[in-house]
Image (cartoon, rainbow, N blue to C red; front, side):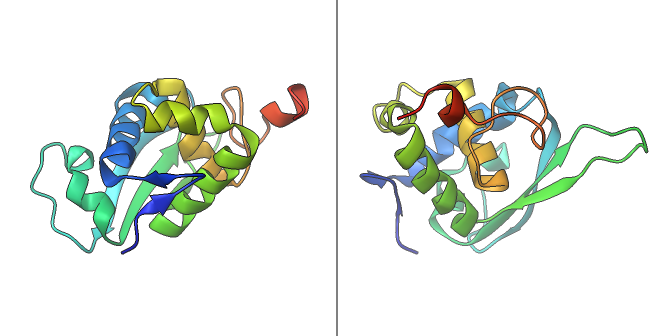
Amino acid sequence: MAPFSAFAPVSSQAICRQMTSAIEGGVDAWCSGAKLISSEIPCIGRPWYSDTKLYEGHFVIQFTEHENSSGTGTKHDLTPQKLQGGLKLLSEKCPERVSEMLSEQGHASTADMLIRASLFGKIVDGCEPGSATSSSKRNPR
């Protein structure tokens, strides 16, 4: 599989760091958990999301939103294609966030922004993925 890219190539190590940061706390405001559904490359690292090799092949990671009033949480599948779309969106709307990832300065909020951009196709601020506003509206470029 080709490496991920934004305005520069993004290594599987950089993606792994962002995924680890997201799953270990970056997405807590809206997400109740992440689960590996499938992986082309067997993961030997523990926890599974910290294995760099995972991001070198096809994968499906399912993120579940916090339960709603009916007692269920909406599930969203992250694939390499969606992740690439999120990187492209971030490079267009928030290039400073991609620079943080590439320079290993990214933190939980950067990781959360990447996951949300990938899953929802927009830059999301706040706690509710479906109803939050785009940061590009607040800070026009």
